[in-house]
Length: 113
Image (cartoon, rainbow, N blue to C red; front, side):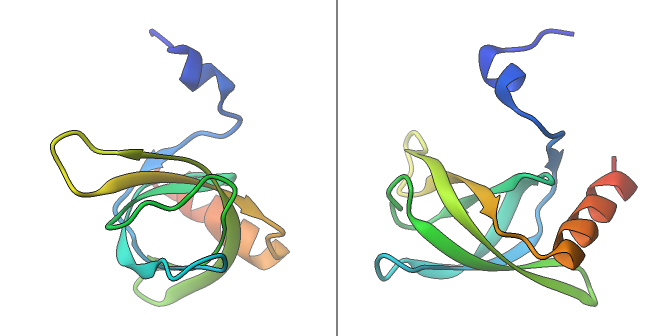
């Protein structure tokens, strides 16, 4: 299996999954609803309509299953514009996760692996 330098830096397995997510940035007016691109125990990536600067703090609600909505907070680690698009892909690292939320995310990733 081939690993890129980016893959080797990741601590957690990322599950490609399009989960509904609502996000709200504390630093500016960036907020909205979209789908995740992938999720892990350490973070999530998603598509956004607007650029969100690196290190911005975010609150989010992720719908893991039809009846399992979890609230999390995180920090933007990277953001890049998608080529030939008006959208951005954003990578967030979870911060200060409650143990129940961490367990729910861990169980979701493990059950869909």
